Image (cartoon, rainbow, N blue to C red; front, top):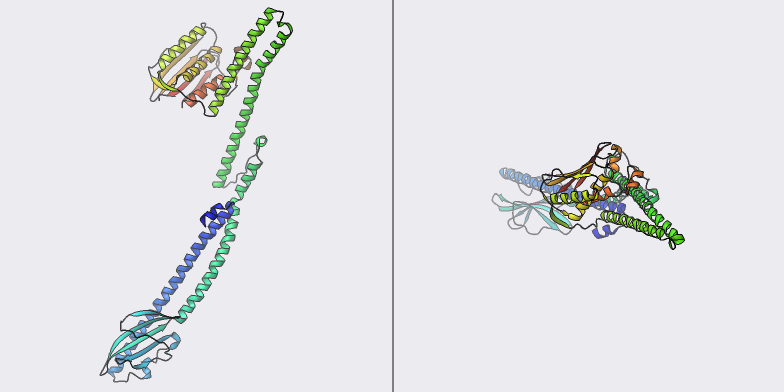
Length: 459
């Protein structure tokens, strides 16, 4: 039954059936308990009637014996009415009937005197009886047999059972219809969510699900769905912008290469100087394209979580000293130095960390005037190391700082083009720091310089 319910396709039908099954079980158990309780009460009542009748007759017998009256007289059992289905018989020690109440039509097997009220199921008859021994003067011992026929009580129980069975059937039908109504009403917002989700496409990510004012689970589901669509919309916008910017960046070197190919086709064969110049520019643009494509591939691998870290333990102070030496050789007109570095060993990808630090310093060089200062320091903080790279460059407007890690973003597009920037450097730096579970932040003031802080875990 459970497997059949689980195989049903509609949730509303599952809820309806589960609701109906649970309601039916509860209703049947409740009615069964009531029926059992009523039967228990009627049996106890019959036992009490038998006990009361037995005691009443015994008291009368004692009274008659005191007055030397005959036990066979009609007055002894006069108060016992067959309408209540209670019957009394007095039997002497020889098995002869001394007295019997009116309407006795019960065939009872021979019973020993037990002094307790007992039950006897005999065919369709349900009896409660009590057999007591009594002493009769000058006649020995006799048996006082009191029987209660529970015909009326069991007839009532049968009617009650039929009524409860009918009420169970009606209850199950009502449970099915009410369960269907309730489930459809509850799941109506989910249908709206489904229809909205089906109508959403890449071109229509601006659609949202209407959220009701009630703070229930369905409202939270709708809000979560809307937030997911909003994230998808931003992601697609970012992806489209990324593709557009990448196409634009690649179009420029391709156009340059195409132009010089045409130049070679016209004059390069005869003019050696034109040929050499064209070849040099084509090589340069090809190198730029290769560099750009490698950066794009690295970012794509980061998006897919497919960048493989080759972690190793190394001395961070030695790495910083190495970067400072190399940077001073490349940019001899700048003051690149390290003032304070804590001696610390970290576990990270040496190549990527060096790439990130070099990218930050290269960025500082591009936007710092000649004879400017670039300082790289490091310090250990608890279970992490903090690296700061501070320059005395032109600075960055405060409103531009949140966008600096976006791909292809340039604060000054004309200046970035002049310095050969693609707008991917800081995006790659942030990705390298992120995959090392580190953090990076930027503080800058126009005309005073920029400070970039990188925090990396020691392990």
